[in-house]
Image 1 (cartoon, one colour):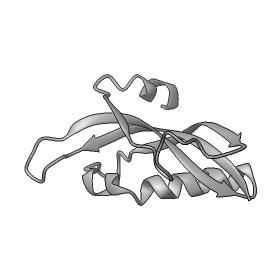
Image 2: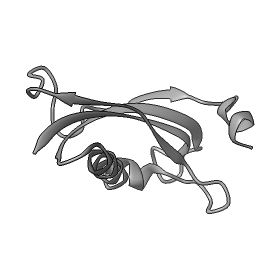
Image 3: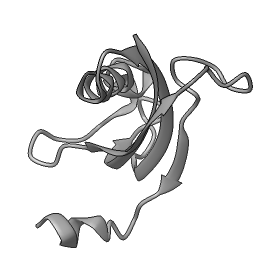
Image 4: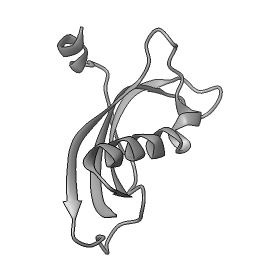
Length: 106
């Protein structure tokens, strides 16, 4: 099996940190480290790992306005990096109030 680092960009995530708190429109980046036979398999495994992570319980989007995950980059690695956790390296969130990306996909 080959080793891959997959950088995922999440957009349009309506995040509610506590059940009664106001939700905020957020985006995020995360690196996912997976073993796979091919790039396509690495991409699908990485998306599933993020989808099944703790972020699922924080999302408050309606079905009419779902969040999206995009694969920014996939790199095949010789060895696993020593300075980060696997398989998920940690979410880096940013506020996304303008949602400029919407104009590109509408």
